[in-house]
Image (cartoon, rainbow, N blue to C red):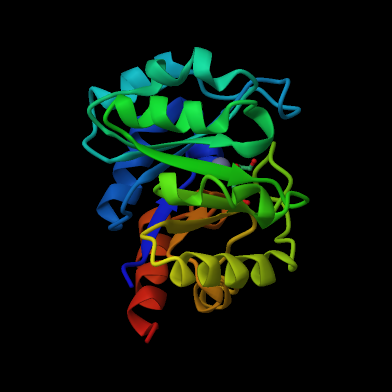
Length: 221
Ligand code: DX5
Ligand code: ZN
């Protein structure tokens, strides 16, 4: 299994976004997790396309875009840059999820679907074979620095089982409350991409924190 770290710039210093990006890139992080919030789907407003545009011109880090917005179809194309690897939408925000997924793929980007802690895996039954990534939310989306919701572990295991039984190639990303202390249990449960916001950027040396996550990846059997 290929394990990847996607540090969330939500916890970065927004006055030094580029410098903070360089730090995690030097620490060997695989992607940059971009939390886009609209103040409607979630009770917070964060990053828009213009911010990413500024960053895209300066870094080659792949973007892992997490849209926590209503009507994502209206804005998806604005987040497509050379760097954009994944765009994920919330299952709860999409009336025509299959159409939205096809639209993301038509733009040459991998498609992800995120589910909130109270959303059942059953809601993915009919879409799983069409997507590249599931984001299992282990906090209620909206803010960095919240505590990991433990029932997420069972959900990750069940999802990995669903993916394997169907012989699919879908990444499982876990988002919310991931720390060095619970990373190995999240990976053991079946995840292969970890989002880490406060665990990386709220520390004095974000690059060093990335290296510590990489060490945990290496220790996995
Ligand atoms: C929460 C966001 C997360 C957040 C994670 O709504 O989707 O990506 O930045 O932050 P931590 O790792 O601090 O829980
Ligand atoms: Zn996120």
